Figure 1: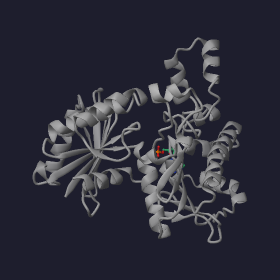
Figure 2: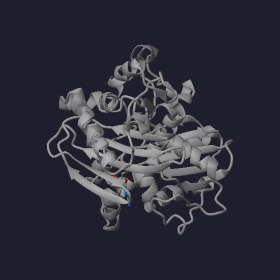
Figure 3: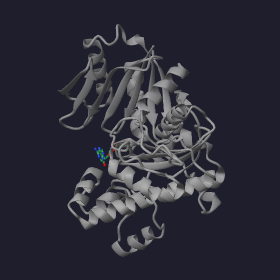
Figure 4: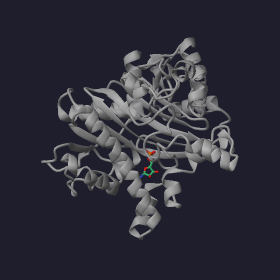
Length: 391
Ligand code: AMP
């Protein structure tokens, strides 16, 4: 059965078509600058990478271009071969604790939750509607990035704020990257050969979060109401003293929108290093003795270690720490720095094993008290698996 996995952004569309249950990728690609001038897409099919510059005025155009590629590359005999389309949705609020088939009620709830994910949820709705037009016979499903975190106990998702903010405005911790944390936790349990495990999953990419997972269920996570909580990220500040915001707004006369821009797009590694949000540039700066980059890395690692230590105590132990996403999979130095800081918990680095990029591997020494793994994430595959089950 063919299942299409879709991740729609406001001006982009990432897709991957699978043959299920074999989990074989038939074609994948990314369409960019949708609705903007100079739109283009890149696709991978039959071992070849193709880039095409075409006008994509909206998401429906993007799906039509995708159909054209499917037909021209003989990936499907008929469009009806695609039985299910799974859409990634960032914010499912506390309405959804699992993936669901789309109906009018689901769509209206995703739209209602747009105020909690203004950049992401409206884009997903546009993608869903366009897919329904172009693939009318496929079952459409949604996979929520917040769903995996819905198992958190109340003491971990509530903020110490007036309770009416929670009941009236839905202010609580929802978490993010749930599809990735779930995939990595499942894979770690497969590697460990059991499901009664205590895991700490570190999704550290441009956005970053850490989760505590007991027996396959999330019990805590570092992202909050929005994806700007917890860790220091590429351009996001993560945890700060909440009162900094009104203080600086008074001083600078910034509007809520302006200050939101600063804490989301001009902070994090970029602000600390005064150079770049990309950890490759930070690593290069460190090797050239750049003091700002050295400080940025120290603070970046410190925050991750703080969360790992917190979850270690909360879970009363930990079987494995898993690293994933761009930095977690590819930054040998960041993993080394984190693991060195965790020596007090019995973590022992194996520098040779840790010298790995983008491949599944054990990176701790055999006598490390906590096993540390690199597990490359695969959110698209999780979306395809859930959609296949629902179809
Ligand atoms: P993601 O958001 O998961 O795509 O991760 C993107 C981030 O991963 C980039 O901004 C870099 O900071 C980081 N990254 C990617 N490749 C490498 C690499 N080879 N070494 C260190 N960091 C990397």
